[in-house]
Amino acid sequence: MRGGERDAVQVVPGRAKEVLPSDGHSRRIAHLTTVHSPLDVRIFHKECKSIAQAGYRVTLIACHDRDEVKDGVNIRSLPKMRGRFARMVRGSWGIHREAVRQDADLYHFHDPELLLVGLLLRIRGKIVVYDVHEDVSADIAEKHYIPRVFRRRLAQLVSGLESLSSGFFSAVVTATPTILKRFDRLTQPRMVVSNYPILDELKTAISPIWEQRSLAVGYVGVLARDRCIPEIVEAMSLLPKELKATLKLAGNFSPPCLKEQLTETAGWERTCVMGVLDRGGVANLLANVRAGLVVLKPTRGFLDSVPVKMFEYMAAGIPVIASDFPGFREIVEGASCGILVPPDDPLRISRAIEHILTHPEDAKEMGKRGQEAVTQRFNWASEESKLLELYRALLDPPCAA
Image (cartoon, rainbow, N blue to C red; front, side):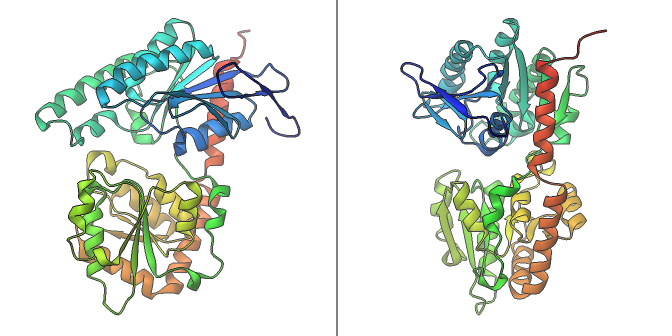
């Protein structure tokens, strides 16, 4: 709801206070996830907050430690499950019960393990949107905790179930054009809603004086081998000793033992681990480094991905150092906003870092060009309007003449 209308507050016994629009007639939207954090950037900060601001009554059902109302979104908590099997079975059953209790007009779910829940809601006659964040079969093929001998068959099984069940949903939303191609056979609405950054969120990350930034480069995300974290740390050891540069890592190590392994490697003395940061912490980090790293291994999932961190670096006005993949090349070279490197080559990564840190004017101009590209094209405002239009079409379809 935009403008001057105020929200009324209704108290539901035993639950958190729920924000309701003052007219009492807005449609109910429920987002469902058992895999993602309740404050996930795509789900909460982009989709849920956007539709709440548009006047919908929004509930997010997710694993959380309490019920709460945040930024106009009513978060309904599920117990956090120990183990993936418990999450997939007990978590799915719990989220289905809560979803039915909410009696929403439209349900929007985000995890392949909730496909059955989506089908059960469709049987009840509900409008159901499936939001596909990743290529499921490619993602399973890279899961280190699944024995290699089972990965291919499991990926085929899950992909087949996803393909079969998607034909029953009201619409399918995907995070990238590559993922969307997997649903070309569908006749119902389908569209890409990209993970572009929210411009206002990163305004604080714009430093007016480049020289005030630390002589540092940063990375935000999962700290794992397939994100080339060992290669990046090694690259820091290859920088000239007189260049007092630092690598700032924000995120969790996966697996946790990777951190201990890296402490024994060259380059660790130049590395600062900052842990998981909230959105304000990410903005502050990007305000104090001179480049952002998105160096990923050439796996099937990453080759066709469009990482949101790349656009967040660009929005913050810093150059990007990225893997030389065709999709990344189109963005980085198209905007002349960074340097592409072979992901398995610490020396080339080191040279890219050195160039940016020793050529401040060039780096500053790269950052400006990236920021202009985000302002003009790669931002959440355009994606928000697409999502809202889809909701309007599903909730209030035009009457047949």
